[in-house]
Length: 318
Image (tube, rainbow, N blue to C red; front, side, top):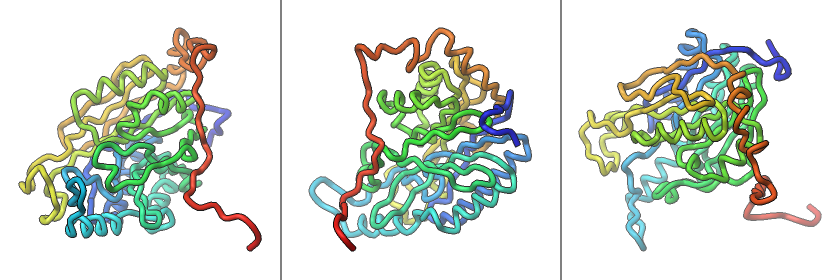
């Protein structure tokens, strides 16, 4: 197998547009493992799954929180959501690691991660025989997501050097944070993964902008999921018709000059593929390198705190 110092000249990438199994993370992991094998059999060596594929994205739920109060049912809804979240040493990750070891694929997948009493919207990175190699916790939950998800910190903004390129992830509306994007570009990201729950028409232009700005390949995956994937008593502002589409996909792959290589697709569950030529990154940076010759550090400067931030620090002898 090539090393990071001997990069591939071309490879096939895939974005997985599929429905989670929101209340059963183990079943969702089994589904993901099957999709990893399917995409790998089709020749893909890098795969990106949607945001919250394990643990579920609670589209339309309110968790019983009007301003100034918390309803008992909302507390129970959170308890169930917390229970469906995964631990990084749990059986769900073991299933994914087995699939990536079998196929040799590099996988980026969105999960809801449980850590104590808090859950985080997280992107995990799994690398073939190495298994789970890192994670990124979403820095800024959007809107009502802040009721249920904790905030990540600067210690989980990794970029991984692989034979395919330098792989990192920015989740959903983090992609609208200019300083977040700049922090990723500064790490030399070439394969910019964007797991998302945003299925609006405008998302495509955002992904094209990021590709042009960073002169990187952008791989965005969103679920295509209906109300029927959730429990009948699920609190959903969009109604209870099982055929109602809660997220309609829009997954896509874009090259470093903003050309769309695959998608956006709104047809249903699918896997989108594209052939990736890493040399396109340098060709793109010929006239625009946002952290290189097109930067103005004498005028603009970004500082990034990458230290883990903990609520309690213990000092002194044991």
